[in-house]
Image (tube, rainbow, N blue to C red; front, side, top):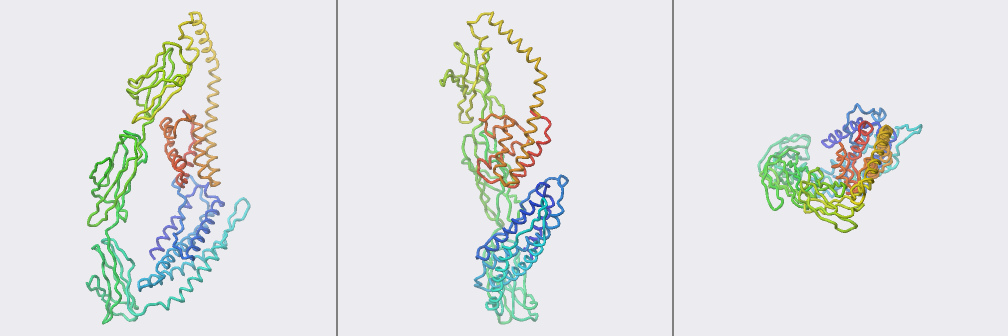
Length: 575
């Protein structure tokens, strides 16, 4: 009965999820494919049971919509048909759960196995009837989509249900031959947690009320049977094996043993898998028991050849001093109530990205070296490369550097920071502006200088005359970029509706980065640090997981992308 209630609650939640589905997910065609998929998956699970294989219940909570209900319209058709599929869902999972138990206890090697097998068989038969009844209702459902009638295909699962019913009828006929006679007990658990309750059930071959004595580790407890059945609850408060048996007059039942163990525990740790060197990695640690109750207890944290004793829950800040993958081990030794547990996490500390900003200034190159946060880096070696050869080397002072040319000034050169144990390398190609190169050259006379100044003044006047046209062009350019951003959402939705989930994540991300105008040499994480756009870091992490980690995007990832690109439609200010 507990399993039925649990599945019923899940099914009610499923109806609520349908109620919360956005309109884009809620058309009849989408509903048809989803529910047909549920029918087909159920058929596969039931066929596996027929083959004697253990299987898992079907899942119905694939939609994960958490936005405000006011944003969405409700599809009345889905609300009308969902109760029928709720019945289908509950019945299928109850068949799976009970048939799994039948497979486990089908050898009926003792009285306890027999009772579990018998109860599971009865539950499976009852739920098979409920499943058959729900399919009859499903056959009467017709969905409309673009003037077409959509009917659910239930032929395969009907055939499987008939085979399953025949199989269960065979067990029903054989059950009477293996029915144990007389006087026996059994339990609802084989293993119990410390301080938990168990129930001892019993059967005796007389319908009249009689007094039965149950012995728990040789301590007697007297109860009365009703219609040949009896039961009693016990609290297990000691670890180890516990013995139970029953007596009535001179008759003694079978003996059963139940093992009691400490309550299991587990760590829940929140952290980023990748951090930069010298940036403190935040690690939040929580310790829970089997029942999801948080435990306040001493734990041990071991990393970098040192051990800390802390009290959970707690927050750690761990700083990496070199490029490495740092293992961090968390241990709870347990106590008289809780079992011990251990967990190891790995944080990848990487070198800090750097950026070079450099330009020509007459007969010299000036520039700065900064990290990803814009902090200037001091006393770092900077190389000037001309024609693939090292022309000069200097060091930064307060993040700045300078190269002076005493002879011919090259048209193009490369400024390079080769990196070190903490910082990543970076480089910058610097090109000389011909106009200022002429001004800086010693061999040209004042007349040429005046001529160049005249050209500069002419260019300035031209720029001023065309400023209005440029402003208008900039406005059009921004409008175009806004339109491109709006188009991303349509591209994404089209890919997702065609079940191209990988392409939906990767393609739309690359289109968006292209619109931003980010340099190709920047990594996704460096793009986040450079542009600092709200929400960009979140979709970047999803992109990295899918593209670099070669993982299939989850429903929550797809919903996050959909929300982000939909929000771009409301962007009115840029840059």
